[in-house]
Image 1 (cartoon, helix red, strand yellow):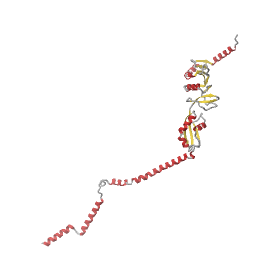
Image 2 (tube, rainbow, N blue to C red):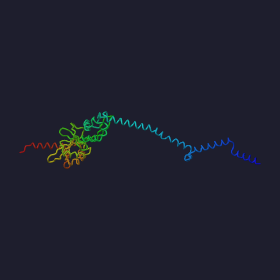
Image 3 (cartoon, rainbow, N blue to C red):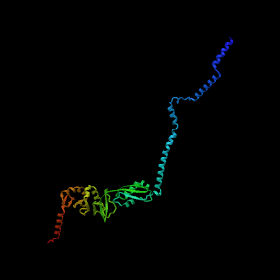
Image 4 (cartoon, helix red, strand yellow):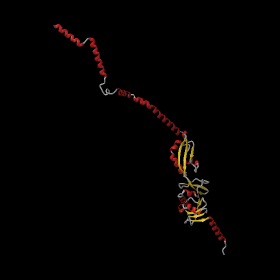
Length: 314
């Protein structure tokens, strides 16, 4: 009986523990599970992500390298532009960038050489420096040459300069001491001496460069273009009794007598007066009121007066 119990106990123990091969196999499986458990991270932040997102996060680690590679051509382009700018600027400020030739455009009444001289541009200056000082060149020209209205300087090629000018319009000429002087649209009389006038602008004669001329120009600039264009000559005919008298010779052959203070006001009526005269030519007196004397009648009166003066008296 005792032997039977001992045998049964050994049998149950051997069945629970298994054979040595079984125990070795179980130990290997336990070690593998332990290793897998150690490899799995304790932080569960990545465990819940899908596989695709994990792959994206892994590839994002390489973004800085690819971005840096893409930016390299841009750096080279900016460097090339900077290098070209440095080379160009170095040339312009070098002796090779000095002003070589000067061209003038837009000048009609003012000689081109006068514009070049007044601009103070010389071969000692750099072309780039001249262009940068465009406003100063404008000031030089308008100050020295009243006929110049505006002036602009531009670069032609690498070291040539072009001066673009616009001139004040000439509205009349003053004849004095054998020379003609431009009367500009702003009322200024240019100092440039001309041997002959240019165009068909009115000629102002017998005036001295004094207040009377200034008064006439002030009146003249109030006239319309059509009236100005109808005048051939304005002559000062003042006397001690009438120091403001002027005679205006019209292009249609008539003469107008006027005085300076009221010249601009009364000459405006001239077109209406002429329209009533027809083909008759004569003198329109605007000094006091409005009077018209035909040339034929004036000639007869002058002839009669000459005859009377020649007749001896008893």
